[in-house]
Length: 304
Image (cartoon, rainbow, N blue to C red):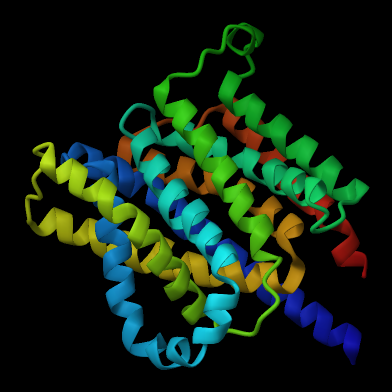
């Protein structure tokens, strides 16, 4: 009975992780569209999470009010979660998309599992095993194949642009968020948790948003802006954060982090559709390696 329940919970976590990564992959493409529409990074991030906050409030305010003591007691942890995810990861990702391509930004996300494992190892939050490490290496190799186009010269002469540097900072922030999410030792619904993290993040995004507005970055309210805000608020925000937090609570940050390698795979498909990019042979080789890494890293779970 316990074994059946565990397998059921694992399948639930896997489904939630696939949904989360699918929505996040779309977020990169929509973020690029926002840049084309001249929507500034911090403005987009602030409006995105403000809309999320408004949507969630009717469903979460009663629970949040009843958890005032818990929130105060865990203020530092919740503040760190809001800082690392809603504020830093979101804003830095949108900032990166002002300088680099969608596929470049999404490919950097494959380094997130490594940052999660590193943070967990350094802070002794969760142990790692040989399957996870081997899977990470193979998935990373797949990403290198895609980035270098199977050309060694590209690898040796690789130079990061400003957007790439912003994405490196962003994935480190997400690694910190995922690792510390596991340290949560109090009971709270996932929606309420997202709402609280969102609140802390908004408090930090507000000053940056006001600075952008003061610098003359006006908001042009049109249908494109509405569509962009609806997507980034509902799917990669509420949907992905709910699914991600739920999966981490079931199988842990290390195993969950492996699935983030699916983001560049989905992003590539979206880029082909919306930006007419070509899926070439090196894309196929890289994708096969990424999927192989995912299976290998979860070998212990499958055999459990």
